[in-house]
Length: 117
Image (cartoon, rainbow, N blue to C red):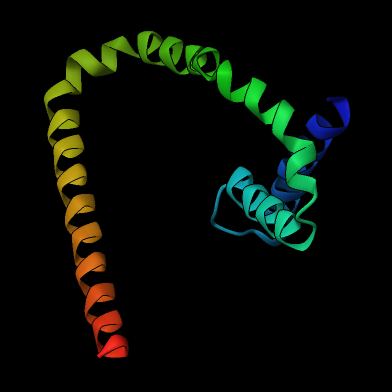
């Protein structure tokens, strides 16, 4: 279990180092996740070794949201002051994300229909 945790955290650390070293504008953990996916693609047997540890992490994922909840409560003054604006932004961004997903789906379907026809 410690080896797999080391691998997961190592990928995240490598992502952080790469982002900070090259001044990239993506989050380090995201790049670390990409590196992990590439590693799993290169060594498929590694997925089975990671499975027990990752299942434990997923089973306890709700505990990882506690710091986010504390952050929301500690910034409650901002929510009371700008709550309506934040709600409007949240709704608009959700609608725009859904429209982008639908547009992507329609575009991909259009391209794949050309290939199958």
